[in-house]
Length: 452
Ligand SMILES: *[C@@H]1O[C@H](CO)[C@@H](O)[C@H](O)[C@H]1NC(C)=O
Ligand SMILES: [Zn+2]
Image (cartoon, rainbow, N blue to C red):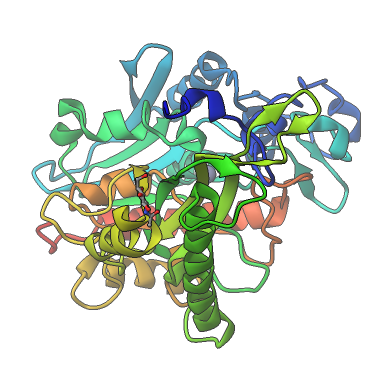
C-alpha cells in the first residue's frame, strides 16, 4: 500500500500562534500634529529638540529614516560635530558623529542608539504616539520616548553642553544612529559592526541602550540573552482515529512538549525561588502548534496525522552552554529515535570572536567598569546591580567583536513602558539624563590608561 502523501496531510492550525508582529504592524497609524496647543514650552530648548525627534515617525514597518537622519544632521551642524552617513544596505542609513580627541591613537568610545521604533496602535493611546505631547506634569508621550530616542538626543545635548564648557576629550568619541534594531539589526548594527569603517574607529568601549527603572537606581546591563527560534517536528504512521497504536506523530510531539514543559518549569522554579532573575535562566516558551488534516468544516476528526510540529521561543543567557543546549534538543526534545527532527534559527551571535560568552565584565577586571561607575557616582547617581537583559539589543554585535559594552538608559523613577501603549518620559528625568551623560562622556573620554 502506498504511503499517504505527506503534503496531503499537511495542514495548519492549532492554538497559540503568536502572530504579534503582523497584528501590531497592521494597526499602525500616522501622526497628527496636535502638540502645539498643549505644550507648556515652545522655542529651541533641549525638551523641544527631543520632542521634534520624537515626532519623526520611525516606527516599523516603514520607518522614515531620511527625516530622522536630516534632523540629526541639522543638530550635529548646530553643535559643530563631524558627521558621516553610511548605507551598508540600501535604504538603511547609519549616521555617525565624531568628536575627535587629543590622543587619536587611543581606542575610541562609541555611544550607540537606534533610529527605529516598534509600531504604535494610536487608538489605544491617550495622545497620538507621534505628537510628543508634553503634559503640565512634564510627561512627554511618544513612541520611542524611552526606547530609545531619549538617549540619542541626550548624547547630543550632553555634547552641546560640554562644548559650551570648553571640554576637550582625550579619547575620540563616536555617536552612532543605526536602523532596524527593532527587527533584529541584521541590516543595521550587524552590518555596521562588520564593516571596515567600524574597524577603523578602533572602538575600545561602547555604550548602548538599557531600560527604565521604577526605583531610584540606574539600571545597567552587561549582556543580552541570545534568542533561538526552535521548530520541532514529529513524523509517524498515520492511522484511523479509532485505533490505539504506538508512535503516532502527535503522540511523539506531545511527549516532547511534556519534557520541554518540565524543563521550562525547572528554570522557572529557580526564578520563583529568587535564585536568579528571569533573564539569567533559559526560557523556552511555546509559540505555535501545527498539526491536523484540514476539512471543509475544520479538521478531519477520525484521522491521526502523519506529521506534527511545534515552535518555541528560546532565550539563552550568556552563561548557558549552547552546545549542551543543542545536545539536549537532539537527545531529549526532538530525538530521532522518536522520529523527530528539529531546526534552530539562531538570531545573532552567542560567542565573541575569541569564543568567549558575550558578557562585559562588571568588576575590577574591566577598567572601563570602574570608570563608568565613577562617572555615575560623581553626579550623585546610584547604580543598581548589573543585569542581563531579558531580550536583545544591538550591543550584542559590539560585544561579538570582543569590545566591552554596557546597556544604559538613564531613567530612574520611571515605569517600564518600552513597546507599550502610552510610552512616556518625564522632562525632568530626560534633563537629568543629559547631566548623567555629560559626566559619562567627560569621564570616559578623559580615561587614558586602559589599552582597550
Ligand atoms: C519511527 O518510524 C518508523 C517507520 O515509520 C516506525 O516503524 C517506528 O515505530 C517509529 N518509531 C517511533 C518511536 O516513533
Ligand atoms: Zn531599543
